[in-house]
Length: 502
Ligand SMILES: Cc1cc2nc3c(=O)[nH]c(=O)nc-3n(C[C@H](O)[C@H](O)[C@H](O)COP(=O)(O)OP(=O)(O)OC[C@H]3O[C@@H](n4cnc5c(N)ncnc54)[C@H](O)[C@@H]3O)c2cc1C
Image 1 (spheres, protein in one colour):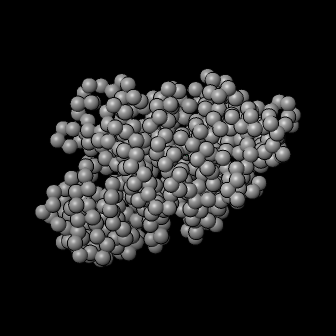
Image 2 (cartoon, rainbow, N blue to C red):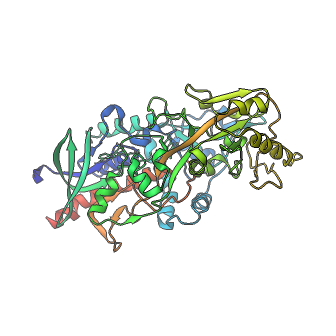
Image 3 (tube, rainbow, N blue to C red):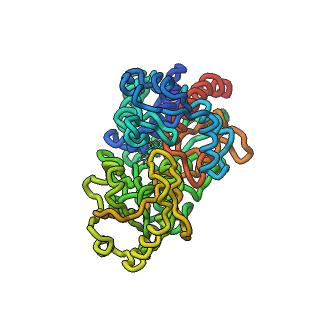
């Protein structure tokens, strides 16, 4: 290692948080090196697997237009974007995390959300309205629900492609196939990163480091160790490269563990999906239509309120509940009244789907489900529905059951119009919630809440924001807000702090 050849800022990781940090550090005039563990064709971490959704504070069409300038008149007239205030966002974060989320981090995320999406737009990321998934057409007009109105054009792959293009254009250096293993700390703070490059150890010198290497969801051993028994068998929805390296490297030099280490984002996922995500078809294994279904387990019993809330507020915690069922699988069962509401992934190659004209025939085709109990479950469910309340998928319609051990709070439609169909699911893990403690300027903190000089963090390896659950599309938003800030802070440290210590 030659200290004279040090770059100002090293970014560990190559997903959205990392690229936001790289772009922002570069904007401050710092020289920047991105170390991405994945090979170039698999770059981008989980960010590349996403639908590209961003949850930001917005005031309806005017905010949307600030990041989607080519919004057409037709789209404006035929869409109700609603509003999503800072208070709504903070309430959602508080409510779904059972009020555990760190209030300072939450406040920072929320208050900086809109300007950060606008900043990304200014760096060449194109956004489009999130029609289809987050808006249903009702009486000729699209109405958005659940807080998320825009996504990056081309989804996660489009987002990552635009970010790498901007990084390259602005002179950020990128090394692929470079796995960071350790942080080297001296008198002035962290000043180098030890890496494995094709099996050979190499040190890269710098003046500050931003860790943005994702969570530990792809580490089977850590999953079992921290999330608990059974998690070794969960399917990983995204990249195989997020094994907790960034977290471990920081803990090794005294950083503080923070957030919910036993918690994660996990969803209903195709039962026979591969062990890791597939970058060329990243969401085809998603099974998000369950609010319009009944979900049954091997015993033929319902086990959760499928309609407790909009999908956006329940999907991330229901994977765990599926994992906890006997055999860690379940079936989503629909009838013909709602099949048109299911997204296209329900029709994708590799979907485990059965269909029949009677419930008796259907359950005979559902592997490993107790038929008499299933038929009893459906009979009781159908009989418990408040049929006088109209069904409306756009709002929490209050069409519920009454008198069941586990009620369905909304969208309760009797299973009575054949053909019936059922989809087999298991638990797919998206990302882990536990990680490092940072302050609101992204300094990584030690056990005494002191900043470790020259060390910053952003993205999923930061703990404290999400517990038990997650409001959909907050991950990219958090990575962008804190990544952007980490890049700026690291550049500033490289300019002033490291120089002062030299
Ligand atoms: C299928 C799917 C759909 C999703 N949809 C959405 C959505 O629409 N909206 C949303 O907000 N969130 C979504 N998420 C969650 C979202 O992916 C994360 O919140 C976000 O991408 C995290 O960004 P990140 O930069 O922290 O991590 P990542 O994007 O995972 O990046 C981590 C990077 O670190 C690299 N890395 C790991 N270890 C090392 C090492 N030792 N050395 C060097 N590099 C290393 C990895 O290769 C990777 O490039 C989705 C996730 C999945 C899997």
